[in-house]
Image (cartoon, rainbow over all chains, first blue to last red):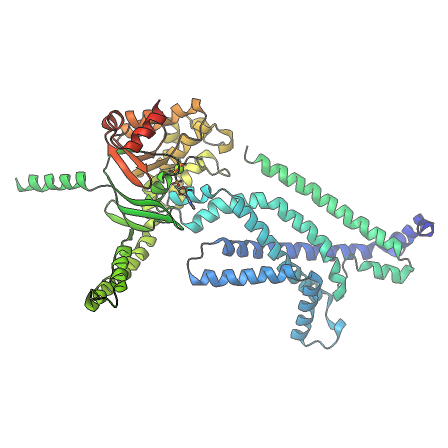
Length: 242
Length: 306
Ligand SMILES: Nc1ncnc2c1ncn2[C@@H]1O[C@H](COP(=O)(O)OP(=O)(O)OP(=O)(O)O)[C@@H](O)[C@H]1O
Ligand SMILES: [Mg+2]
């Protein structure tokens, strides 16, 4: 165990500074952040739409069918590991493009597949978060809107949704933070994300432990920064109703 | 001469055709029958106080009037237009009872056929009516104001936005017009300085008065109040009752579910007592309080008046 930390400064230099090695980490970090942000946006849109459908009064058959589809989607996504979902969409994409070679896919295409997959994945969780905060809103809000003659949809958009977003934003931010860490499996399909960078650094320096520590530190810093932003947003939201 | 008569006749009509008319209203929650046949006509300018023991169905009755609650059967009309109509259950019952006589000498196949036919015809008609009502229910609700026990102001909007939201969204008024009216209403209740604050900064009494003028901004023909002062601290009850009294004196038609016997006595022109899902007694306030006839009402009054 001692030997791991022997000459730690030297190893750190070798694994981060020498030969501009930090550029590699930066590339990985960039890909990780791109995937997380893209997926988060897609998840947000899917989440809002799915939550609306799930919450809408089940009067006409079209909404009933859509509701069934949404429930199926949520069950499947939440019931299977995200790595598996990534593999399935990756190889599905390969088949679609008729690539023969496993590594024949371009890096940008792989990232695109990852964004879609993580987006569809987090959409299911976002939808449930949204649904939870919609249900938490006092029934009286919908009734007050309806009693003024506003339609269900108008009341939902003007009265329920803004309040929902307000209470859901902190939780959704959590989902984003989770997402950043979850994307670390992207390396399984050949994407150069932050975690995957370790294998490249190890290949060049023969160091295993140090790059792992460096990468952990980068993730941690990122998450701590995001948590500060989250706290700031929470304070702002709380203040806007005073 | 003829003109005069015609005029008299329309005036007569206007006076007698009720703003709200309720016939044989029933409401079940699952197997629990909460309303067991309510009949009442509410005329323009009426202030009807609704009293009764907790859980007797007062709120349910009120909420059925603008269909926040879905009645089970009966008929509700607002200004002569159907808001709810479902009277086929009786016919269905008759048809089914005729059918049970099958095998006995009383069984009359023609009568059964006839009953079945008229039931099915009625069902078809009522479904068409319901479709029509669903298209127009939002328009009716615009003219039926409602004030809730818990105020139900919109917490994410300022007071001014709370009041102008519906008139502007429904394109009844431009934003400027709506804001002007809202400010006049706010001035009237002495809260014009609160126009740009959020509801969470107001006291209960202020919130409820805002909720009342929010409903008023729609220029309703009738206003429904469901225990508007029950959630208030005692010292704030007065300001809300005063505003309601003002509205009543100006001729607003009101249906008020309340525990405030003073208000029922002084302001209402009709008081009804709901018990066990039916209107047990209805009278002018004087008769109602001085000379109650129903035993349950006597009991109820002795408890609340003391
Ligand atoms: N959504 C509902 N589902 C099932 N039962 C209900 C529902 N709403 C009301 N009830 C029941 O219907 C009955 C009448 O309720 P309602 O709220 O109309 O009474 P109320 O006269 O307004 O009483 P209170 O004075 O307590 O407000 C009660 O027994 C209540 O439990
Ligand atoms: Mg009630």
